[in-house]
Image 1 (tube, helix red, strand yellow):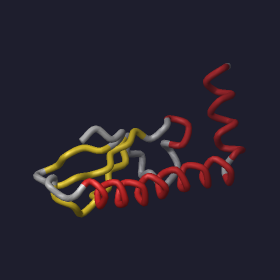
Image 2 (cartoon, helix red, strand yellow):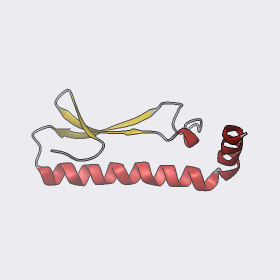
Image 3 (cartoon, helix red, strand yellow):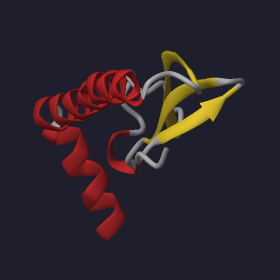
Length: 85
């Protein structure tokens, strides 16, 4: 199965995603460079179940990322200014 951000871990599927540098320092990410969540499904699980679980976890990641960017623009702007300066 070739789905973006989907990896196997000890016989189970997990969602693994790199955290963007711009939001890495936010407490939600705990300064971890990658965000991993188990799908709770074995590698041999039906494709439809894997896609359904992947979709939920993917939406969670994207929603979290969007919320952090929208609610903390001052912090993100400061980081961008430091990078440019």
